[in-house]
Image (cartoon, rainbow, N blue to C red):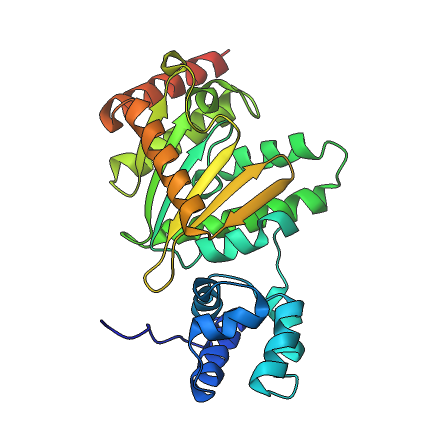
Amino acid sequence: MPGPKPLDPSSSPRAMLGAELRHKREEAGLTQEELGRPLFVSGSFIGQLEAGTRRMQMEYAVKMDEILETDGYFARNCEAATKSKYPDHFAEAAEAEAIATAIREYAPQLVPGLLQTEAYARAVFRAYQPTATEDVIDKLVAARLDRTHLLDDPTTPLMWAVLDEAVLRREAGGPAVMAEALRHVAALSRKHRIIVQVLPFSAGGHAVMGGALKLMAFDDAPPLAYFEGPGTGLLEDDPATVSSYELAYDLVGASALSPQQSLALIESVAEDYAHEDQP
């Protein structure tokens, strides 16, 4: 079996902490399971910290300094590694998303963040915060658009999105904004950069009606599932839980239109919005 993938400690503070954690753990002669035991976490959780797919919380940093006798190193550096431009409930998921090799997402109401245009993102954030200043909205939009650069690479990560038909029909920002947003999704599909399906209203009840679901896979760490609701988010690494979400996603995909049918519907609805916008 190949060894763990080498980390680039310069890529982020979290990668730096992960690389040092792996080094100190191996120096102490401990397995991931043995280090996780006094922290009441799994060995896979330790592996995710080392791989940089999970954030190191201060309570764990302090305990690791005690176990590994690192003279407060992890506690001192933990604060810098946990700073984020994203909301607290989404920060850890966004950071994991940035290093995922595959992302599968079910979107019940909105175009997924990675696929949004600037105008669409602005309309969404303004709906979330109708009394916010333009400066606040500008910062939120900038952070969201920064995430979309993950798709600048022609192949990685693999992006597979299942959009509920409500995503197409719920007008955010007006017809022109929706036409542009849906054409953008269609263009990414036509360039073979993403796989997109639409779950039609006619599919009826399905396995992920409770909220948005994101599944992330990594080269050197176990997969994660992120389940999101209004202002809340839950990042799961428990293998049984992640497996159940993977099954739910597969069931939704099986009920959705084919990629070809979905592309045709997306482009058709985009054209309807474009005509609606004409005087």
